[in-house]
Image (cartoon, rainbow, N blue to C red; front, side):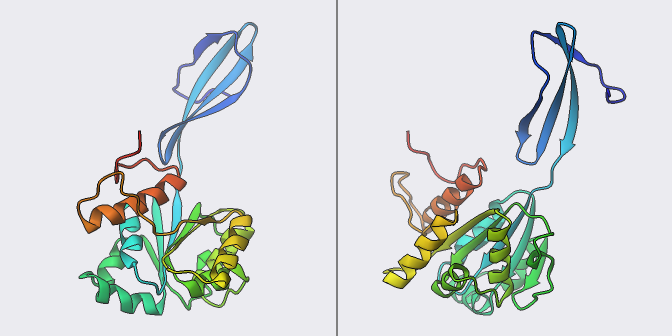
Length: 230
């Protein structure tokens, strides 16, 4: 059926199909190809998609990674901070907890296991834990879901969605490495907070942006946070 008020474009020698062209991260145009005789009639459909990300900040050093991620992610952002993370943020930065919460569209407490993101029926596109503590890593790897952060991570895994863990710990014990390996085999992206220096960073912010940029790369989000290797 032709959309009301839209004029078709005729293209020769094409098969009936649906193609999706991404014009922005959360806006697409769907072209409907309807075969008719030797021609194909194209009807454009404008569709707005809502992208939704869960950002978790746990009790590891490096809270600025999660904060910068909130500043750079498009779409709807859902934030969960652990109790220790809320203590670390004012210790490591000059940013108040209330200011961090304003960067998100929705904020949940880590002990709120009735929150929407604790259910697989609630749709979100990806979850990023930045930074991810060794404790959170161990719980997620072993299926423990006693907090909202670990429960949401378990949901992300079981629903086969994108899960990125920005682990910020060094050196690593064999236990930590085995936990990472188990999750990597399940398709989880283990993204250590390891900056590259080929972009010639000049400030601490540049170093943070490199790691955050690599996270955005995993989500296929365009950015200019660091200079790509050529």
